[in-house]
Image (cartoon, rainbow, N blue to C red; front, side, top):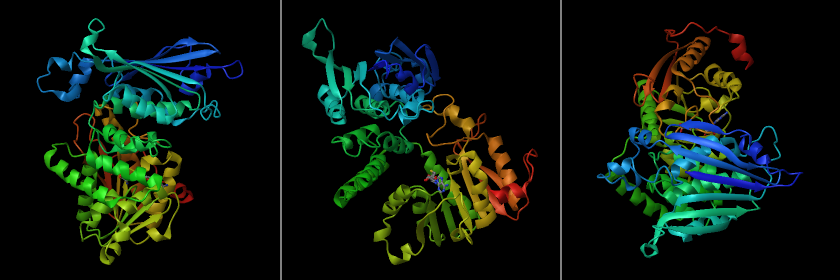
Length: 499
Ligand code: SAH
């Protein structure tokens, strides 16, 4: 799999700035290992006038099959050989998109610490992909890239050059050119549109893909004339996810929702969930574990701190024992989506009296959060910079002080078990840190001791004998005695208060 990115320049604005933008020095050939092969970055040419970076992904077909995801295109059950002999090593598929985002993650975000002005500047770009699987053919390729400002040259690759009468294969040779885009925009277009054209992802599409799509699609996807096709294909035509994404896109466009369409999609989701056999997504297992722990604690009035788009609040509302549910988040956008998900404006009075959504930051103490039975911090702490964590700790355990606090966070040891995660990468672009089980325990034990709580640990998801579960949960209960699992921490009341 192969892709090149070229730019031209002048002595004042040398083309070799591409090296800064990609965070890869033009003089070095570098290799990055991923769970399905090796990604190489090298520069076939690098001068002030012209610079080309090439991303070459060497797919290890055997590793891909071993990981159980090498079903091959279409996943035909009789395709035993096709697992090993297929187009994966050659064609620019979803694997290349994942490699792109892993190897050029800073460039995709538009970050460049050394030269902060660079990523914002548009520059002449030319991208070439010699073998791109394109379900929908050259017309669709043009339909996807042209509205984004690319000049598209696309040629269908014949099945066999000696027998032109056989017609074209589903592969195309693609060249994209633009003078009006930044490199970050270009990379985000590719990251989304390569798997869309390939129309077959090499890994199970879970709900975090919705976030990835929305992030990568920021600024261009909502207004793209093919946004529906892009969203549905990107999410492997999973209706429930497609609906989530479409809802969010719609909000961004501030368009009025067309209820009949939502209903249509709702029906399709129901039909899908009856027929589709699928693993329970981790997010659902996490919610179930949280709800079970809240029930066990006998909590009725519950805070969901960092509630995001309100999935947990929605689940809690279904159980009448939760008499008051407050979702708190710093992000207005997340709260807007949560309020739409919950249909707050159309809710009956009784239901509505049980739930509220409030905007606030957990980095500050907040009187509104006092006096609750329980607080949940589900996948929130890792979104704070470590130096801000003592402030959150004090706001929750020192000031709000609910009897029960549940904290979940990824177990970084488990990351080696994710197929789509290149070695050494965190699970989410916004994670400031991910902890091992020992690190999480050390933090939780220290917090418990500082604030007069006991703490127990519950695995969420399959508890791997070697690396533990994908999610770790700490259940803090006020006033119980803690059995310390580590004694390396020191109590420091002053530090906590100062925060
Ligand atoms: N609890 C949800 C969402 C987790 S994502 C779930 O389990 O799915 C993390 C959330 O924390 C985001 O919605 C983010 O906006 C929120 N967040 C991050 N920092 C915050 C802060 N300082 N105060 C309040 N919310 C914060």
